[in-house]
Length: 211
Ligand SMILES: C[S@@+](CC[C@H](N)C(=O)[O-])C[C@H]1O[C@@H](n2cnc3c(N)ncnc32)[C@H](O)[C@@H]1O
Image 1 (cartoon, rainbow, N blue to C red):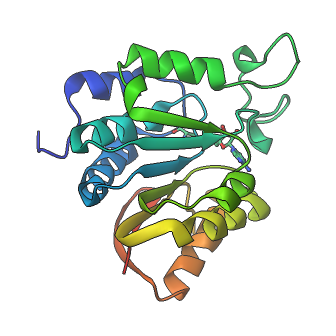
Image 2: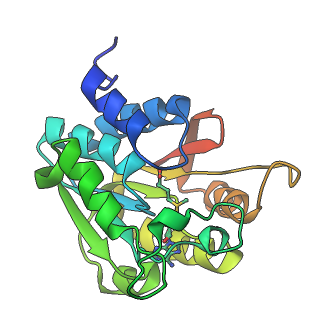
């Protein structure tokens, strides 16, 4: 185990949490977060869902003495709505009939003992980004996967990355046969901007360093 690997109990909490990220990508996320956090600035995730990836950012933040921020409106993405491929009926609030991942997220973080290292931002990504004014050491984009949402996440949050900070983009599939193209398109934009250097990817996770 290298110093950039999570402790076994953190890894177990990640694997037990509801969510979509495979372990291999989780380990790459953790290593990137561990490195970025040495800048002494907060880490930000767009797309909390039930907190699976947040566990890793929170533990990396804890070790560096910084805060992990995680942003979600908690109503689910398009593909998580009833009738769609990634719907989980146990996440519907019977009171409203709408998806609500916030209670599960809070239980996940509590169970992992990481609540105090995380600030949860509940709202729409562009609305929160428009109010934002704090430099970030890491921006992890794993929110809405439509062109509109992915572009808004890229445009709203990358201006807040500190020099030397890391931009991570999840679900980048250059071949349309493997998945939706919106994350791939913002990855292409980041490369074309000339302001990032690409680091080695892990599966669909892309990692870029801001100059
Ligand atoms: C793929 S899931 C995140 C998965 C999570 N990172 C994990 O590892 O389990 C995407 C999340 O983005 C949220 N989301 C989608 N569009 C959003 C937007 N415009 N603002 C805030 N959250 C959004 C959805 O509610 C959903 O929970």
